[in-house]
Image (cartoon, rainbow, N blue to C red; front, side):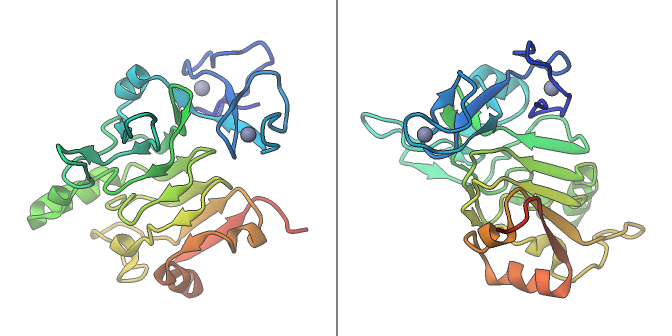
Length: 244
Ligand SMILES: [Zn+2]
Ligand SMILES: [Zn+2]
């Protein structure tokens, strides 16, 4: 098994990755139960067990991830990455969800304290203020050129409209099979087609590496604009599994 964060090959004995200190955790993709006995199927619901990226709240903070947990009176009903909390409810603007290092690859966690993270919300890497005035926008796009690959970890189901807005360097987006909605459509990056966002930069097609098969992808709820960009060759879909 590989470390879900840094990709280092782990031995059976490595409970914690020696390189990046990430714990090795597997969980059921259907009910979120953590599996400790090495079973491939969940004994509670029969769901598939896969490696997840589970952090404590403190580790989330240290690694620059903001998440929030909407509470009902008696239970937590969802955990999201990004967005922010307001008195009356939740707002998804004006706050960047990721304040960690802008490295070539950024891996988004899928659990916090053993609870599944449901989705990646709006403006996770850049907020609305990053886009105006023009000098600010230019600076933002240059800053974000560093991030070439974003990996969404196993278990996350929703990617919302502005999730990866401003990620000007994005070349590869890895999506797990757990994704049910992919509402970010790359419009901010590809509205002019494959025209570079800043002079001297290249703009290559963006590749979605989906961990399922093409027929499983058919069940993912995506926008018509993303379909259009795929048809035009601005976005390329690669499926890790064959059908049948
Ligand atoms: Zn690691
Ligand atoms: Zn289960």
